[in-house]
Image 1 (cartoon, rainbow, N blue to C red):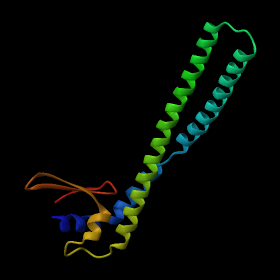
Image 2 (image 1 turned 120 degrees about the vertical axis):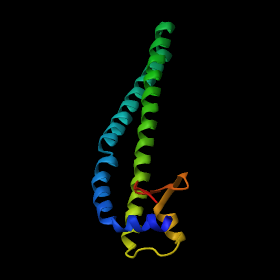
Image 3 (image 1 turned 60 degrees about the vertical axis):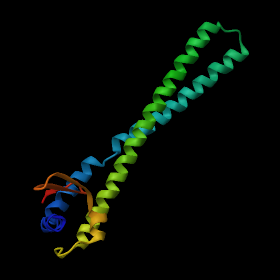
Image 4 (image 1 turned 60 degrees about the horizontal axis):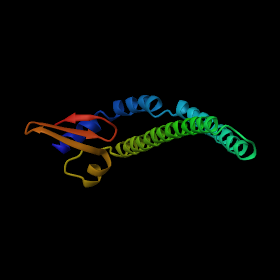
Length: 152
């Protein structure tokens, strides 16, 4: 079954290359996320400076401690919210980068495979195949690292 699925994949590889090149531009683009990261870094820097000024002011002058506490906690909450979003966006960017690298590796490996497969090839199993899902004896689906699913 794997050999059949690999040969189907190899037979339609030009179409797969075209589709993946188109999809890569959209799915793996991090332009907006990179801009958001820059904005979040700037926001966190400003908030940290304001927090420091707030602490310094409290240390140097007599300030109502309830007002100080509310202001300080509000600033810390804003900082923590920005920090959480920064972590989230960073993780999204890393995930996109890993998936892009995996897809590019898949494309490169598939480009090298010029001949149909006649026997099991462990290298192709590891480099091209993501997972196999068995629904029944007659319904086995091979999911390749580029996202292509082939029933065999």
